[in-house]
Image (tube, rainbow, N blue to C red; front, side):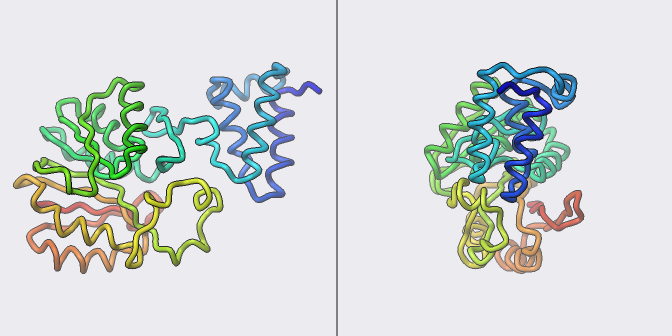
Amino acid sequence: MSKTYGEALRWASSVLSPLGVDPDGARYVLEMRADFTPSQLRLHDRDVMPDSALTQFEQDVARLSHHEPAQYIVGVAPFYGDLFKVTPAVLIPRFETEELVAWAAAEQPAAQTGLDLGTGSGAIGLTLAKQLPSTAMTLSDVSAAALAVARENARRLDRRATFVESDLFAAIPQRFDFIISNLPYISKAETDVMDESTLTYEPPLALFAAHDGLALFQRFAAGVAAHVNTGGAVYLEFGYRQQPALARLFAEALPQAQVTFKRDMADHPRMVKLQF
């Protein structure tokens, strides 16, 4: 039976909402499949969907009903005005991380070198490659599968970067004018408050860290000073409850660094800069 785009969305909502799945995911997959902007989708609200598009949408809604992220279903996620390829090998970029990127981009216009450590899809590093065209960006990750996605995004978006497979700084000998990272920072104790879609589909390697989510910060703090140029800076994202613990960690491990915490648009402490 044929449906208009509007009818299809209302049907999807009737299927997904009782399951506790946000029906906006259905809107997102429909926009991506049809190559519509949100306003174009509204303009086509009363248009009948092609049979092939409706069949695909029904299949997509079935996947959404199992809490599969919409971004993985269509294979792309928006970040800073671009669409990045994503697979279950990488985290889905979050809007909040755009604030971290904006902070670094605003403060590093003269930087010659930058490192995105734990790059995942490459969203952070490749966005900075665009925002800071004079900066030579290096993107690293411990996961070869994640680096493959980042390389594909560099090709798709025509961004230049150097890629290194490395466990933190293990395979990175050089120093940089700035380093930026969204390290894994979630404690296993927080799983009961996390979205089912995140727990089921996104890579645990990029989400969780031992020691109440601080293990990677501890390792990072132990090695970062040897990889930042004099006068350089480090920009990090963290969990909104971690500021006190991180303040103590950086004071002990990096007393030479000036530490500045920053709140996100929701007024949660979520970012920190280490100025060397």
